Image (spheres, rainbow, N blue to C red):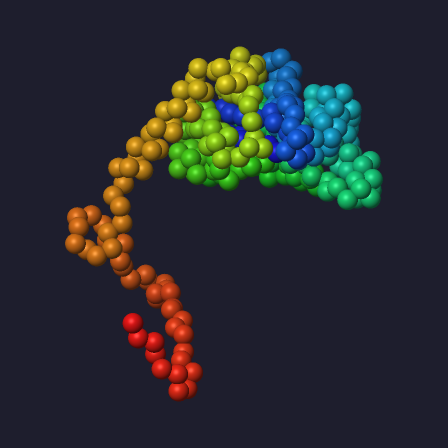
Length: 275
C-alpha cells in the first residue's frame, strides 16, 4: 500500500512519501512514489503517487518524456494549474490505452496523485489528482492532501497544521503523521522520501531519504510514543458515581436519551427464577 502527504503553506510546500508496495504478504517491494521535476530558475514540481504501480509508473514516464498533451507538457505549462491539467491528461492517456485490458483481467484502474510546486510569477500550489484525471486544489482552509493509508496520520495534521504553520514545524508534523501510520499499518514502510520546498527558491536543497538509521526520525519515533503515553496517563479516568474529584462521565446528552435496554418478557404462566 502507500502513505503520502503533501502540505501547501504560506512559506512553501512539504512532500512526504513511503516506498513500500505489496501484493499480498509475501510480495513486498520498495519503489519510489515521489518524482521531482525542475527547470532551473523557472519552475519546480513534485509528484507523489498511490494506487496501481504499473499505472502510476506509466503516468510518470509520460511526464518525464515531455510528450505534448494537448499542446502542453510540464516544461511549457504557463502555471501550476496548467501543469496539473497535463498530469491529468497523462492519466487519461494511460486509461485509454490500458483500461479495457485491465477490465478484462478484473483489475480496477486505480491512480491517485498529489502534485504541486511553483512556476515563476505565481505562488506555490498543490493538487490532488484522481483516476479520471480531474483534480482539486488545496486552499488556506484545507491546506494538505493525503493519499493511500491516510486515516492513521490524519488526527495530528488536523490538530496542528494550518496555512500559517512554519515549514519546519509542518515537516515535524508530517513525520509524526508518517510515524503513526508506520506504527499501525504494515503495508506502509521505510525508507521515506521527504522534500521541503521554500517559496520562490526553485531548487531542491531540502531533499532527504529517511531509513531506520536516520537520527531525527528515530528521535521522533521514541519521543512521540513516550509523550503520548505520558499524556494518556495524565488524563483523569472517568468518574461514574460523582464521589471522586474530576469530571463526571454521567451526564444527560442533549440530542439523544439513554440507550434503551430491551428486557426479556416472561411467557404467560412462567414464574421468575429466584436465586
